[in-house]
View 1 (tube, rainbow, N blue to C red):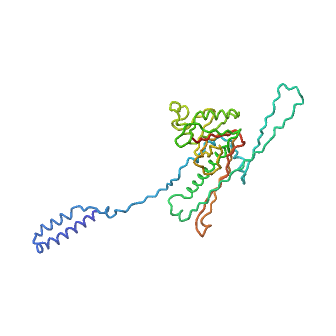
View 2: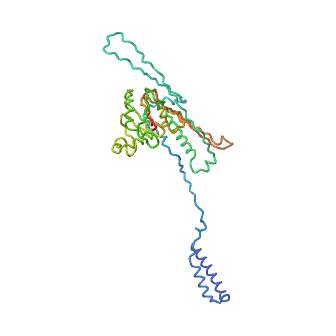
View 3: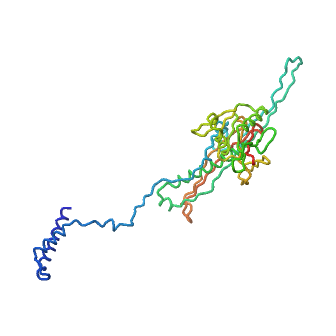
Length: 354
């Protein structure tokens, strides 16, 4: 730095001397005055122009962060506590596609003050319940070697996470659909809401509707243990609209969750199945609802539900086996089931149309 300053000073002195020698001849000015003036100007600090030269040149910073879509459908707390038969699915070296339960639906008759012998024989009977696991398979995702070398983030790990999330969302939607009854029957009541119009032509859920549903289950002598009601988001919001002087006893103002009461364990889910209110019939899984179809709140007894999960398998082919496209390919397979074990002790509440 000192050498650079010294050389600059010597250069300024040399230039000043040359101009001072020529000044009296060319312009008739004293050489001393010219020498002093040029030296003074040379010592004035020169403004930097590096910023101007670099104007329009920006640095780009790449992070390793990857933002993905958001969905609450991948969380299904309503499945917590359902009897799990997964231990019977995955065996050493193989994986079962179905498991079997035994249902004994007849209770022995009770004799009071019996005087007749021998006591009659009564067969209780047995019924085989087959639980066939669904197979969920994702489509292949290609990942080229060029992408792996060029990208700053771990694309394979990101893709694996997206496949897992997609399977979870699908299987949970299928689970709540399977637990909902196909329609209104003597053993599986499907009721309609009776509240005021919410502004869209839909009748709101009222607390009285929940009481009526409880009465329907009481009349069927459904066990009070394990009564689980999974509210759709419309019905959760309807309850949040209750009179403020009563609502604090119905739900938590912090979480928005409805307290367990009326003998129900309350849960909620964003992807409950659709029904046609006029017929009380459930739409098939994946069907596109009409404008008058409504999501329903689903009831099931914990004693009438089962779940089982198999292995999650990742299928992966490397780019060195694909000379034509030089791409890696990945997809997943997962066996899973949630289903009712009997066609009773279930039900639904559908928003009626105005």
